[in-house]
Length: 315
Image 1 (cartoon, rainbow, N blue to C red):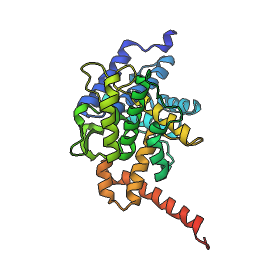
Image 2: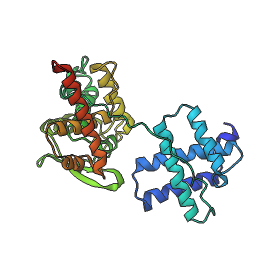
Image 3: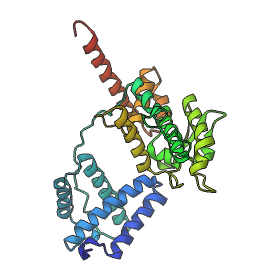
Image 4: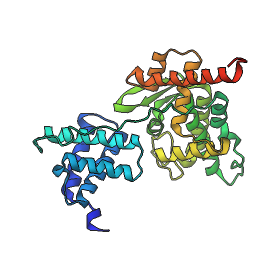
């Protein structure tokens, strides 16, 4: 590997110190910390290849980095997050006394198009979460217990994503003690280390019970407390679940892009369309601000007008 592609230890140590600040003092989620660490790593590598360090950054160098990101084809949203990481990092660096002035102070943020989230129709969502049980090639043979266990896990994961509106990272972080089948509740460990309790639907409870009874014992390692594990017996990761959702999405809805967040979007939209109070939906989703939840009312309104245009004779 070329020397210019390897960061000096001093740069790595500075990024790790910043990550510790985010985790321990700002109490941000591991997902956010990891994203900011990657963003700062890209900036540090860009500067290193140009014979500079993070503490040598100037407004012109930072603008060149963002221009480079644009030419590499990164989306505006991704570049916007990197700008946020850069602002946060240099505020911290300046507060630590490592720099006299913040080089990111005048750095602008790219405008991000606020796209409405993709939403499945209720019938589509119901068919998708049930698809592991109706897979065109289910592992029915007696000599494939692992395949059957994976199908039971997939069904339980999909039911929680749509039936309880969980984020993919929240599903991954669930442990055995977080599900209370008797009370039909699940304790969710959300962003910013904020816990919330959400309902467990009858479908989700049955799916989780089936996974715990006949699936998990086939896959889990001894002593593991993770609710969901992969074929190797380790706790599932976000990539594992994304692959699960995308695979069943391709089978059921070819040509459509379906992600774990699609099911969460659908959960929120279907609640609002069914008459749920927006504040209740905010609590269920774990949103810090109701403004974040309000975009789902825009989705419902868009579908309402689409239905009018399709159905009314004078539309």
